[in-house]
Every structure is written in C-alpha cells, then in structure tokens.
Image (cartoon, rainbow over the protein chains, first blue to last red):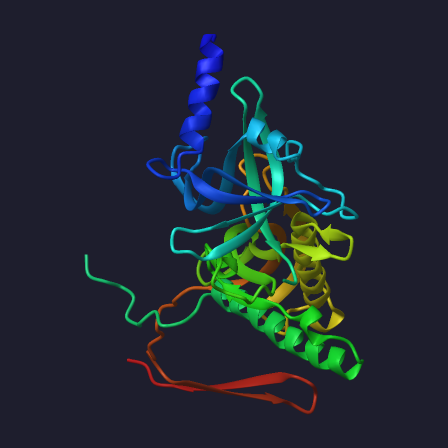
Length: 129
Length: 222
C-alpha cells in the first residue's frame, strides 16, 4: 500500500468515525430522489474569517465533507451544484448538535480526487415537507 | 477666548431633514401602494418594503429565526459638497448631498414541481423589485422637491449599482444588495449673530403731487 493509499484510508477512518471522532450522520438525496445516509463532517457556522482582511465577518456558512468512495458504493455519483431551475438539486440533511434538523441544497461541489473526499458547500433549501 | 454663539444648536441640519424625509416618503408611499394593490385585486405583500435609516447591518433581519423576508431599505447619508458660488460665507450654503438608498433582497432555494426556484435568482429579483419601487416613488413628479419645496432645489438619481454576490465562500443565505445614490441640492443654514436694536428709526415716504419723493425721518441721536 502506497503512502497515498494510506492517507486515503486514514481520511476515511477519520471522517467516518462517529464514536470517538467528529463523524456526523449526513443524508444525501440525488436529483432522482434516491437518498443514502453517510457519516462525514458537517459544519454550520455563522462567523467566518475574511481571507482578504483576516477579520471576522458575519455570514452563515454550511458544508459537509464525505468520503467519495462511500458515495459511489451507495450507488450515487459525486454530488454537484445544479443551477438549472427545471431540475431538482442535490439535497443534504443533517441535524445540529441539539438535534434540530436542517435541509440544504448543494450549491458547490469541491471534490478532492487525490484523497477521495468531496466538500459540498451548502445553501438553505425549503421544501413542502 | 469666550464662546461667541449664544444660542443652543438644537435643530436638524438639512441633510438630516432630507434623509428622514426620503425615508418618510418611502414608508408612506409603500403603505399606499399596498392599499392600491389590494384595491386592484393583487397581493399587497408584493409591494411591501421595510424602511430603515442609518443602519449599517439591516440585513441581519434576514438571518435565521426571523421569518419576515420582506425586502429591506436602508436610507443613509453619504457625503456633501458645497459650491462656493451658490451661497455666502455668513449664513447659507448650497449643499449637493448624496443619500444612499440600499435595497436588500433575500432569496431561498425552494422546491418547485419537478425543479426548484434558485435562491440566488430570487434574492436578485427581490432586490431589483425594491429598487424599482424606490426609484419610481422618489422620481415621481409629486416629489420633484421631495415635498420640501423651498428647501430642496433639485433631486436626481446619480447612480444605481447592484452588488454581485461572491462566487466563492457562498453563504447559506442569499442576500443581494442594490444601491440607489440620490443627489439632492438644498440649503444648509448656520447660526447667526443675534441682532441688537441700537436705535429706533422711523421713516415716512410720501409722493408729492409733482411726483417728487419726500422722506421724513424721525430718530433720536446724541
């Protein structure tokens, strides 16, 4: 096993460790409505650092990180942002630390195919249910 | 050196009066537009705006926990320039001031039939709708002088600018801003020396039958 394979395996172990690590249950729904559940990292924060000025600015930012192979193994493709309003978007659901559910649309997909991780940038999404 | 101004400066300057007047006009007319929309069988909420003055962070109202997503207007004073040719050094100076009227629209992606309504577009359309209402109200002929005739000489839209949201580091909420810069020309006044009566002088002016002007002055002097 090469060093890169070791890194990838470590990444999977770290991302999907929800017993001792920061892993968190994340639900992913593709445009066809197929839903699968994963363990990954999720963030939903309201203060971020402006990279230009280094100052703290207000602005809610949410993202999830999921191991790509887990997505593929679940029969899904790597999620991506869908701008076309005639199509359903990729939808991400996860709870906050207090158990409150939140639903998001994938607005941007940043796959790292070297390590096998995809970071999904999210925006709020409202549905009728 | 003792103070020379003997009166309390307890008034609003012209720029403050006009800033508040702009906000008042918008609030009154938006209210009326909603009434007119209702009378016309349309949804009045499509005409609703929330008006603020001098708020640096009004879009915080859009943040989670607040279900009111009505577009927000913030009227704030930007700057003034004084033309030396229009005024005098003692009491009155003509001011060309810029008032920024910032319009904020909120959008959220929503499920819609077999597709979805993108939140980024929704936010832009909301901001532009607010901008449209603001421009039409302030440039209506009824408000040529912002209902302050005698104070306001002219009002004119200097520019309209929309702000493209950043493509990187996208926020969960879509908020788009548009700025209408309104240039207003008006007078500013400053405290004046309080006059003191030195002598009472009365003058009668008469015209004689032959047209000659006769002046009869009556005053005491020592």
